[in-house]
Image (cartoon, rainbow, N blue to C red):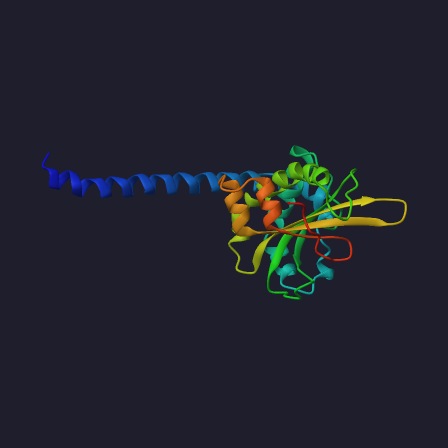
Length: 212
């Protein structure tokens, strides 16, 4: 084959490889999302509908999104509760805005987990280690629902952990940008890197400084 022909075919072949890789990635994404939707059966709805946010409590577009992606949220509830074996607090799966910024146009799909662990307000290394497993599980499950994160109003996800002490119920929340979620699923970020790049708030809504 003449050298010029080889030179011409090389970028063409590269384009084909890239096309096939993109198609394969898209098919995989669709299968993951379909798997979540398959969990949204009538029985699952009866079992997990109570875990979703009360529609009457919304003051943002989150109510519309919850109606639009209702089956996704039921599927997420089933996946995390049954397959991942985490305890979701009733009335917490839905769409939230960051009250610190007051921006109701940037919503985060989230949920709260009932944790048997107690986390100090400063979130020490030991406490962070306890969070890593939960973060990876929830992030991977939610990222399966790519349709939700294609919405312009959805900026990312938020995971809350609640626990009780002798005085009152306390919690910490981790606010993750959707670009970091994608990087994690694509193995471009570790769970620890995602945590350190995200915002963590406590029961009072104050930002918690993470140990370096």
